[in-house]
Image 1 (cartoon, helix red, strand yellow):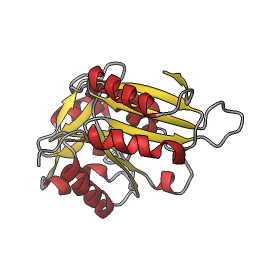
Image 2 (cartoon, helix red, strand yellow):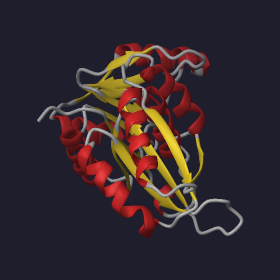
Image 3 (cartoon, rainbow, N blue to C red):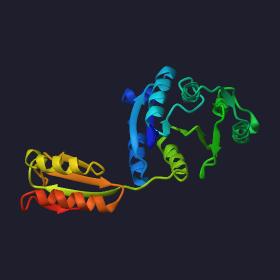
Length: 245
């Protein structure tokens, strides 16, 4: 089966121990949806080589593109490069271009051995120039190794997305005054007969809201979405739909 879409791996002990709240995963989900690249999975794991290798193997089975967040740097817990290389069956090499960039920024060109770890990458890696910062995007075999710092992650993500192609989704929302049990049969019927349209049902329990269920109808083209919306509305009692967005 052809691998399509993207998978994300959020790497960091600090995320799993609640020292830091992950901002990169939600942002990636939002941006991939906006550009029309389906997201197959998001996994959050420790700064551990074996854990990253396992997550990489799962992600590459599901999706064409894999995005990692975190574990890029000069300290002992920055093990993403080594783990990605292992998952891809490649060696870790030192990139001369990165060495030059690092030396150019160092005082008098003096770089610590630890600082030079930033020049390490899986064999065959490519550097994508990054506007606004000296540090390029590191990519190898449709895997994009992005930093964990949210500001840098967002900058580098835009550089990657500019090179990928997707199909933005057409979305319609229906807000209903009925509960899910009262509309389930209609949704079942439409979903069964239009499997190419994604239909979601989300109950609302806040009494301050004016609706009880939000229905989402989405597909790659407007025609099927409009048809599904018409079928749903046609199957519901008069006045069931409060509004359509």
